[in-house]
Length: 466
Ligand SMILES: Nc1ncnc2c1ncn2[C@@H]1O[C@H](COP(=O)(O)OP(=O)(O)OP(=O)(O)O)[C@@H](O)[C@H]1O
Ligand SMILES: [Mg+2]
Image (cartoon, rainbow, N blue to C red; front, side, top):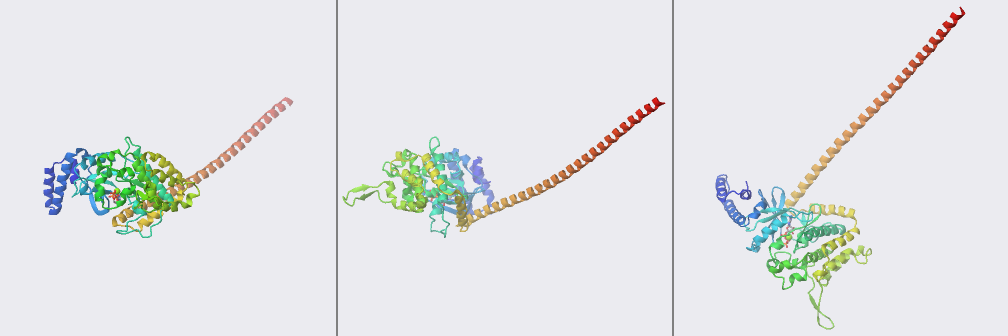
């Protein structure tokens, strides 16, 4: 049994160590043993301080050795539990002491969430080298960011299939549904780190929000200094997030409109396919007066709005202002109170969806999936896709077999019906014959009766004559 499972069941450290010692004879390496001891001790220490986490500990967890990616907060590795899943370990340098209490609180919160557009939280697992346990979640295909703006390193997708406006709009709708679910909770749950990197896509191109809880466990100001990738994370942030008052301790002063702002930036990137990594500065010098003028958040990203306008040009004639342009303009308002709430955003997305062909969306989904499948970035992804293909093939074979069975049963039914019709005709013929015989018999009896009466009358008459 795995150590995590033993801990979960309350087996003492001493007992586990005895078991580990016993396994030495079965060929376990000294290095592995040392690592195991450390993990056991760290896990036990952690669970002693946070007993509420015990119920989330997953047993039988194995790392496959494939790193799925790495971000500002931590790295994500593929694991099997025994289903294929993903485990995110927060970078050791971000694991400050008070983060663990937050971490446990967030695990409890995440385990209470269930929505098709929120990445499913499966539990936690202890791995060597990390004081905080890893967050285990469902394994998805790719991120929205990687789909639209693939990283040139290590292996970019060559000639990826273009993602249609219909599919983009459907993914944005998925994300807005996920946000509406979070904001609709009591009290509302604010993500605080919504970005195209934190929108993952499943094997049916459905968008799901991830990293909920990670941004809430580790204060962003700590992260800003240690950012390993995507310095653009600040691009998604509204002005109130960079205001001097927004220190670690005041993170909770944000309301849900912070996520609405980020959603607007996600929309600019999704439609325009250009990551707005260099927004214009907050101020500029007026040409005539030389005085400093302020730019709004929307003006700061105006360079990227032309890509959005280009993509939507074909649909412009339908609207005075395309609902997606309206959506971006409203979400990027500088003042939080002027931004729409996520339900209003959803209404605009519904309107936008109306002008894209849904059949084309489904077709494009398949093409995009095929283009990702034909260029697997790693062997494990290829394995997952292969598994899916096998399951699909098995399903198709099952459906075909059932269809064959159904066709045979149908054929037999037709034969039975024919036989029934034949016997019905035979019965009707027999009935007719019987009726005929009856009729003839009745006639005969009548004739005999008439004859009988005549002869009787004749006899009487003769007698009278005599
Ligand atoms: N559940 C998952 N299934 C499959 N791949 C995943 C999963 N979670 C993350 N990834 C991959 O790992 C990469 C890194 O994720 P991670 O959340 O650590 O960083 P990030 O999202 O790029 O940045 P940030 O730290 O700001 O969230 C993602 O871009 C994605 O490609
Ligand atoms: Mg992330």
